[in-house]
Image 1 (cartoon, one colour):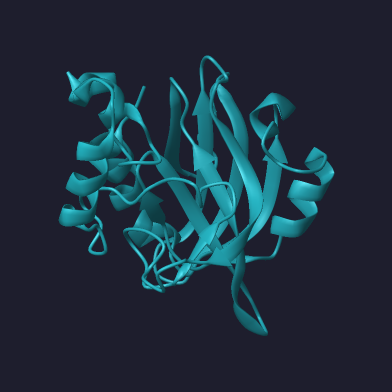
Image 2: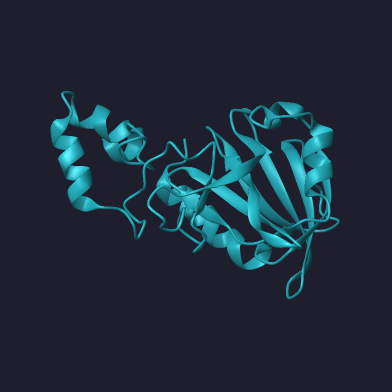
Length: 202
């Protein structure tokens, strides 16, 4: 399963090409990849078509793309969880999507032009969902890659990760010391510290 470094590589690669891009069309090839979206595929498609992506943001293993409304600050985001085998790939228009593409966003960027963002997932454990953004409890940026002090409600229970500017080393060590469990189990608890999976915990 992708852990923090792998998801950060995805975020870092996407950010320049999607920040400020407009979503011109959305196609859902497999509705199982919308399992965390509160509504049918038509709702996902309708709400995203014509929207503008603000940035690519990450906390732990979660990635989200805040959606800019023409009249106000972002209040919702596309939340991406890669699961075991999920990928988010940038493609040129006209290139074959491949049989494992589950969701496709056709985007237009003012600098990079017309592109595709493909959510590819062999085992279909990952997902995309449109979710409301809520203010962060501490008032700091919600995740790495944006200054917005908001976070999707589906991600709000996830603790900050070690690369986050607002990660508090002392608070983490204090909470870790209070746990009555093995070190590995504590590190895998995403409500204590996020982004660490079996590979890095070992």
